[in-house]
Amino acid sequence: MSSLRHVRSVLLATAVAGIVVAASVAVIGTAEAASTLGASAAQSGRYYGAAIAAGRLGDATYTRILTTEFNSVTAENEMKWDATEPSQGRFTYTNGDRILNQGIAMGAKVRGHALLWHQQQPSWAQSLSGSALRNAAINHVTQVATHYRGKIYAWDVVNEAFADGGSGGRRDSNLQRTGNDWIEAAFRAARAADPAAKLCYNDYNTDGVNAKSTGIYNMVRDFKARGVPIDCVGFQSHLGTGLPGDYQANLQRFADLGVDVQITELDVAQGSNQANVYAGVTRACMAVSRCTGITVWGIRDSDSWRTGENPLLFDNSGNKKPAYTSVLNALNAGGTGTPPTTSNPPTTSTPPPTGACAATVSLNSWNGGYVATVRVTAGQAAVSGWTVSLSLPSGSAITGIWSATNTGSAGAVSFRNVSYNGQIPAGGFTEFGFQGTGSGPTAIPTCAAG
Ligand code: 9MR
Image 1 (spheres, rainbow, N blue to C red):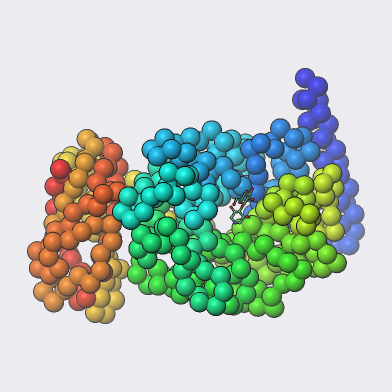
Image 2 (tube, rainbow, N blue to C red):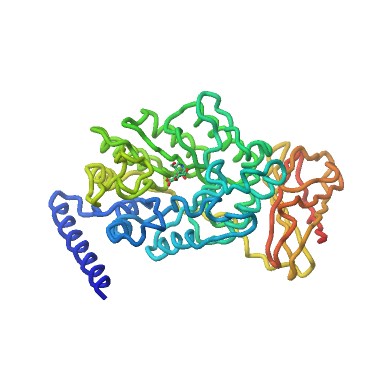
């Protein structure tokens, strides 16, 4: 009872403060200036989010700021591999669901973080390698993305897979040692499990045009060219006291590849420049139409992983810092609108086949080549193992394949599931793909289960 009264009085105080701000701003002629980060970002179709911790949701000051200011949440730790699959095949979603439900209750977008990462792996995964690790990783992606299917705005499918320093290449890790295609396998599995979620690659030290960001840029360009499903790139933006001069240009070059960009883990070392750096990041996002939102990595300085650096927008007591005001002003100054939300390809519009399984092909063709994405859908019973057969036109030959193995590469060819996608629940589907020269298949493939 007393806590309810407390909440009501807080809401009332917030509403009154909002009126005062709106009235005083109206005098200087910007009647539409919003008084919270989320509302202000929403005016241009963007979100302003925070990473939150389930263990802090009982803190009244924390939750008041969260619900007042933010319209997106990210689980700081609760959806990571060690949290969601502490022993192999046993999934625990208690704390992840608390974050999700907090976001739903606020009407906020929920960012999923992170399906695969070389850190915060459960110990059982750390001791695996080769195909055992690959299969476990892909199964993890499938299971977690399926649990949260339809509820996540964007998933960080793969986190921090590129090396620091000048190589522009991949970071060595147990996941990388399963084969260079581990990232695309993860993205395909995530798409199959939750077709509505935006699928992001997320990394740090990518705050300008540098060797690392260029390595990632080249991967995204390659994925787009080959039809690997990727929708967004996350720029963590754990910043010191300066902002690279080409921060905005770097965001823009990724956007120009046809992906959204998001600032995903923003925090800035305290210093005389903190408010300016925060403003600069905000202005850059507002100037890039495909920059869909910003997430700060915590709420108060005392909530931050950067102990002693006071890198956030609210002080330890929950008071707004100068950096808060600089962000709000930059959001209220407006920017280019975000493009209309595009939905990912439809997934459930076709009824389950009446036979054991069915397959359909969608083609992305160009003069002399194509990428085929094949969807295998189970009928009214679950399928364990499948074979898809089709005929390629004369002159066509397969040059690359993922998420299946093939028998033959020209003429009559068949495709067999791999270990992680043979099981399809009744009415469910999985996808595999191949690339070829010449023109792609035109006849409907056949599918056999078992
Ligand atoms: O903020 C997170 C902290 O609570 C964890 O202890 C840490 C474990 O590695 O991860 C922190 O979040 C990281 C994020 O998941 C990925 N990018 C870097 C973040 C800061 O380390």
